[in-house]
Structure formats: C-alpha cells, structure tokens
Image (tube, rainbow, N blue to C red; front, side):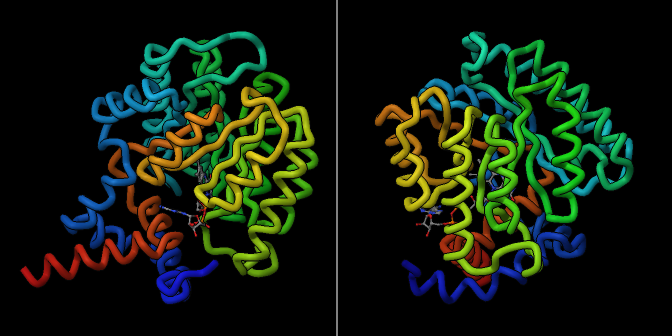
Length: 319
Ligand SMILES: Cc1cc2nc3c(=O)[nH]c(=O)nc-3n(C[C@H](O)[C@H](O)[C@H](O)COP(=O)(O)OP(=O)(O)OC[C@H]3O[C@@H](n4cnc5c(N)ncnc54)[C@H](O)[C@@H]3O)c2cc1C
C-alpha cells in the first residue's frame, strides 16, 4: 500500500538519484553539519577504528555483518589502490572479530562488500580485477566472505563477467542482482547455484533496462527470488520490505542455506525479530567519509528519511 508521504516523495526520487552523482552538490551537502549528522544514522563510522565496536555489537546480537568501505566511481588509480589497502586492513580486523564455522558450505559471519568502480573499474577493468583478486585472496585466508555490489546498469555486464571469471578460484564470491533490471530473473536462474544477493536496485535507470513502477519491481523480485530459492546456492534476501521478507520466510529452506540482509540503521527491531524467529540476518555496514552517494540513495528510497532530512535543515535555518 502506498502512503501519502510516499506518493508525495516519489516524484523526487529521480532528482535525488541524479543529485547523488553531482560533485557540486556533494561538496555542498557533505559540508552541511545537519546532513553529516543525519548520514551518521546510516554509516557505521568515519574510519575502521570507529566502526569496529559497531561491528562487534552487531555480531554479539547474533547477526552477521557485511562491511562496505564507502567510495565509488574512482577515476584515480592511487585512490583505487588505497581502497584495496583499506579492505586488506579491514579483512585482517574482521578475522579477529568472529570465528567462522569452516565446514564447507556454512555461512561466514563476516563479509566485505566491494564496489568495482571503487577499485577503478571505469579507468581500467584490469585494475579492478587485480584489486578484487587481492581482496579475495586475503579474505579466503581469513574465512571472510566477499560480495561484489551492483552499481548502475552500465557496469552490470562487466561486473557479472568479472565475478564469473573468479568462480573457479573463489566459488563463494557473491554477486548482487538488482530486481529492477529486466534480466534479473534470467540472471538468478543461471546463477542459482551461487551466492547471490537479491535487492530491488538503488540507481536511476532507463525504462529499456529497468522496470519503473513499484509493482513491476516487486513482481520481478518475487520471480527472481523463486529462481534462487529453487537452486543449490545461497540466496541473500536484501530488503526491508515486509512483502519480500514474508515471501522469503514462506520458503521451506533450511535457515543455514540462505539469509535476510538489511542496511545498518534501518529496521533494527525487525532484524532482531527475525533473529529471534530463527532466521539468519546480515547487516550491511558502510563506513568511511565518502558517504554522499550512499546517503542520497537512502533519501531517494525512503520518504521518511527525506522528511527527516528536510526537517533538520529547516530547524537549523530557523534557529
Ligand atoms: C544488504 C543490502 C545490500 C544492498 N546492496 C545493493 C547493491 O549492491 N546495489 C543496489 O543497487 N542496491 C543495493 N541495496 C539497496 C536496494 O536496492 C534498495 O534500494 C533498498 O534496499 C530499498 O528497497 P527495499 O527492498 O528495502 O524496500 P523499499 O521498496 O524501499 O520499501 C518497501 C517497504 O519496506 C518498508 N521499509 C523500507 N524501509 C523502511 C524503514 N526504514 N523503516 C520501516 N519500514 C521500511 C516499508 O513498508 C516500505 O513501504 C542493498 C540493500 C540491502 C538491504
């Protein structure tokens, strides 16, 4: 059901997603104190030291974590190198946080999520390949899982190709599939033996590649979920939507063969309820100072976040 705030805010979504790619707005918004304070609701910390206690607390509650070092669309090879180095340090820290059950096929409590454009994909795909290889090698030694995030549709094909190239050596490498993409059902069918995170999709896409209305995206999600749940892989159901959560729970699949996933700072109570009901839940925890694009996508998908943001700005102005 669509609420009044949702229908009022939906037309703003394309503008917010366009703003998420604007360097000028990034400067403006990132420097504004109220925005930085709000962004903190969705970001685990500004650096590794700050995020570690947050990760520890989530793990202590029985939930798993996947950690994202914020940053995307990197055009500077030195920045791409720095991102790989940061992931290597984070993987070393994650290995000390949780002891994994190393039985083949069992879930790893700690994972990193990686955006290939942060590893330099748009400069040179081979640079991203080399970075991802270093991350996967270190993660395999540390019993940490790796999942490659899905970005805008122009990167979908190369991202899927690179992940496939890695399967022989790193069979548990995870891939994100966005249900708004028209080919998501086919991709899920083809990869239903793999570790796949299914989400709705957070970018602004053209109608020829992506469904545009909520009902079509939901139908695509449910169809893609059916493909994954019929397979031998490890479905990761990334959604805060009660419709999706209920549909996933309706499958008769052992709790250690799939998991729910939600974003840090969103529906914490629901995450705990799912854990209490015996489901596995992983929390996606971003950290770092490059939170602008991530934050704007959160504003675009949730009117309540946008209202909160606007209220904070007006309250500040009227002070
Ligand atoms: C773990 C994880 C990883 C992700 N990785 C990627 C990725 O790699 N690439 C990508 O494009 N996108 C990614 N996303 C984002 C995803 O594509 C969606 O944009 C985002 O999850 C919003 O969609 P939704 O399914 O949660 O529900 P929405 O369609 O946003 O919301 C549907 C309903 O869910 C409920 N709901 C949603 N949020 C809240 C809330 N804060 N409080 C209470 N109820 C709420 C409401 O009932 C709402 O009507 C990821 C999401 C998660 C959870």
